[in-house]
Length: 251
Image 1 (cartoon, helix red, strand yellow):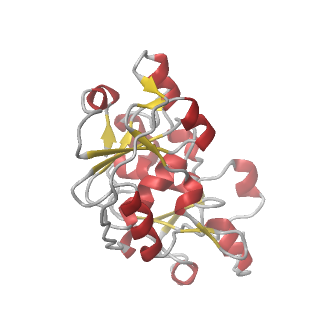
Image 2 (cartoon, rainbow, N blue to C red):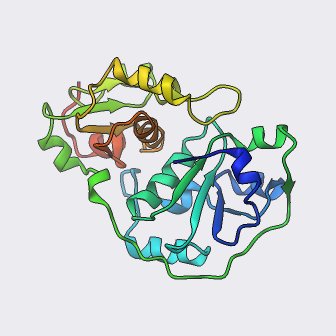
């Protein structure tokens, strides 16, 4: 699930790798990891009329990912900044669409650079290929299903305490995504620390749904839980914006 920066350093020229840089386009243009390709979170979401950030249709994603050289033979390494949940949201999108080999770089790109690892301004372009979506509904949930599951599943709110106490989905547990971020430029805290963090909140084996405001921070929570050994985890990508727009109950 995580790609060591030392491991990636030795595989930068591997033709079977696609390295995605999730930072803003301007940051990418000023310098990026060798052979990486720019893909921002704005490119992998569909904004509905209420402002909710939803996963796009599989056909759209097939064209997008195929156009940048991703197919089922490629190992995809998703990289960004350690505090930016765009990394996790893009990884989750590929995960949801059934890509078999996704890894998240264990450090942020700024940390990569500070370690003296190679950066470049040369832009890599891979030949287009065919990406075949195989959606995995077991890791995503929509509002109606979540509403019908209230009281039966564990719901984690990845937002800040201020947002949570301003209103949240009934029964949700506050679990800010920042609690599971790493130090010294690491994207996530160590596995043992994450296990302790979530063992205090949720028994293993529970069905868990993560949400936030737009589904980005909740994607980070999704992977923190996966690293901790939780198997039955779903993302409500519509999150609070979608829930509120449907006038569903709040606490």
